[in-house]
Amino acid sequence: MRLVEQTPLPTWLAMPTRSCTSAHLYLHGSGERGDDDRKLRRWSLPGLIDRGLELPFMVVAPICPIGRDWGEASLVGAAFSSLALLAPRHVASSLTISGFSMGARGAWIASAQSLVSRALIVAGRTAPDLLSAPVPTTRIKVVHGAVDDHQPASEMRDFCDRASRIGVQIEYKEVPEKGHFIADETYSRLDIIDWLNI
Image 1: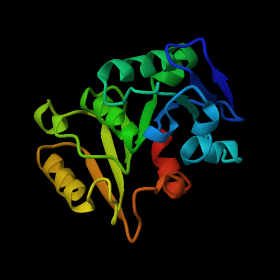
Image 2: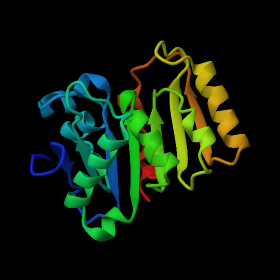
Image 3: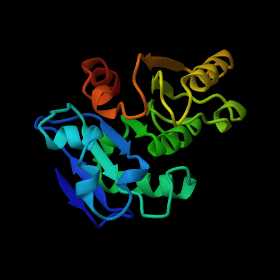
């Protein structure tokens, strides 16, 4: 695990111990913005990797600048540019993305534009633009806490139902009795890791 600063955004990079054939772009929540990668490694996917979680794919985690938001298309573009500089060509062609909370906004943008084959949305907000764009080819999995106080589960569930009815490949998983901070338990699940490993 190392921080790379010669990219459009400071980017935390984790390579698997064995050769990999895919890459995963991880977009963090609002509390990890800035230039201190220690905040990024406190929890969620980078934190789990820092504490020993081994993954079969490369993880690229750019750091969002203070005062900015992953909902900005230009910032998502900078994240993909960072990935392109770090991932070998054969790996970047098998790409997944995930976003926790604020990071989910960027994952929705990438999904709507079919920039990735799979997207994991963890405790994010709904993305109305997804319903008005052409149907993306990205397969989307949404994991949401039943008692999330940032985005009510009922609204996310309804949004996913509407997206599914227009042809979006979307799956909704509600975590009973859990609130907003479900990242550690979500990224610790083997079925989630297997789903992201394409």
